[in-house]
Image 1 (cartoon, helix red, strand yellow):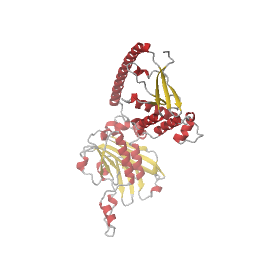
Image 2 (cartoon, helix red, strand yellow):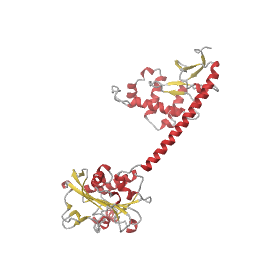
Image 3 (spheres, one colour):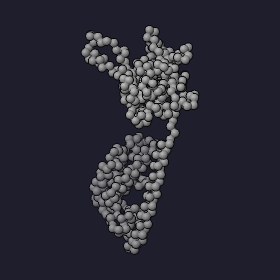
Image 4 (cartoon, one colour):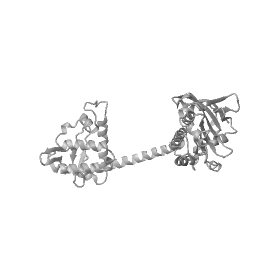
Length: 426
């Protein structure tokens, strides 16, 4: 028997191919996707219907991915990318135990027309022969009968040589696998080492006293209870019930809280949220705390009472001020009676201290107006903004208490990027 003789002939019907297609599409590599099963089903259906000549990139883009039939295939590679992904997922399917003996559906490289064939079912040596690149399969469509599939024979005289080659190939594969395992262990070790020895950013150093506790961090939010007057007996009962809850916060403080919680989540830390009115000294003595708000958060004023920069509220003239106790002439003030659209500049104070009252690390983030509070949260969560302070700060700021006064322009009731006005490191 010469090399051109046919050793085995299998007949694969259209029904068998379609059953195998459904089996593949229901498998884990495909069932979590929408476009890849649609792609594979389309090209298989076209091939089975005798229209393989219509399987072109542009047609697939239009039929499967809803592209315009005249779309620019050179600038939109969606079909090529999806085809590569399908080849990978088919390989994932057939590598699973038991699938290696099933009918093969493949998408050859450089083509979108699928091929179908049965893996070699011989004993001994022939088990691995199906993967050899020189054993091409011939596929023909037989009208009314299905698909005629044949493969070149393996001469019997070559079986011993094939056995030796298979053993050698297996030894090489084992050696490669061992080398890859060693490289993987080295890479994993380097990753762990780099995580442990990575140089922390300035912003991470700033946050370390607040995020270093494994017991969590308190997030103390300013509330609006001070705005709620005694309930009038004429108010509807549902409104009275809402007011009685005393759990109201401003929308701006909610935005600030979300930003802080998101930053903490990125560093695998969590927060325990308290309204300022509900947080007790016992609570604050148990964990480090982040305080949002000034005039609506009495803890901010109490914990900063002995520090250089402080908030001051003039209830008579409705003025909010950040004052410098070391320089009484220096103050930053906003008229709290001004409508939001009339405020074009806001100010905020950021303080990181070790409180003698709570014996814990405390961080206060508060603006005079709402835009100041938002700008302050951006300042302490964005390294680009925070680095403006570190370029000005004295050496050793990392382990000292500090206060930073910032300002922001307000445009359309939204804060622009924050900038440092003054700071104190002690």
